Amino acid sequence: MMIKINTLTKNYGTGAKKVQALNGLDLVIGQGMFGLLGPNGAGKTTLMRILAGIVNASSGSVNVGGIDINTEAGKMEVKKILGYLPQELGMYPELTAVQFVDYMAILKGLENPAERRKRVDTVLNMVGLSDNANRKIKGFSGGMKRRVGIAQALVNDPKLLIVDEPTAGLDPEERIRFRNLLVNLAADRTVLLSTHIVEDIGQTCRDLAVISRGQVIFRGSPTELTQAAAGHVWNLTSNTMEKPDHGLTIVSMLHLAEGTQYRMVGESASDYIDAQPVQPGLEDGYVWLMKNAGHAIDTL
Image (cartoon, rainbow, N blue to C red):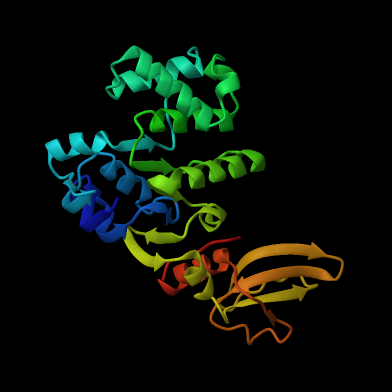
């Protein structure tokens, strides 16, 4: 399935209170796992909500699998092939997982009780919740609740799955489990993953876009984003209290016996004769991209 987004703009408010969440955004997304990366407030969630038919764009066009979602008829058509997991999904804590997913299936138009129950059982099994299907949601961990969220998003067997910040607040084991689940689901559908966690993109996506201030500032692969920072990453070990500056962004710090080791990204580290060039990682590429685009990055 192909998603084509052209000059998409979304404004909130008017006059002096006007906020532009999306600013002429252009993007093409194909089948498989696609990552949408950017800082909080970049416009990612607004884009997701437009794709899901929840809010209307101010201008521009969106075509999902040949369907124009600028029309009400188009929105209704896309919802038949859409699964959506927002960052915060309201659940009824007194319901069991089976009851909640069944309720969502009814809302999505699955009318035959026998077929609906079969589908509910199938998606709960897909997300690894079969053994807990009859437990009340109020007793679930954060990761289990996110899996219930994915189950309800999958219950109508969507061709497009949209997930917004799915691993936020999860422990490391649940994050890995959730990432692997999304990769498996992307084998035969389009999965759009929105996050501000760089590692989630690097572990799951072949293609990604970086959004900031409502615009796409990068479109490519994780490898291409990583290599963008080649020659612009250094390690520096210092036993002074003064942190490196001179236009360098500190990506990480590690306290060692011989001093503090700083990982730095910037145009040049020539002011620090002991700085050692190192191979970039995806996070370095992201930081370098944001710096190059003139976006302030405060890491300390």
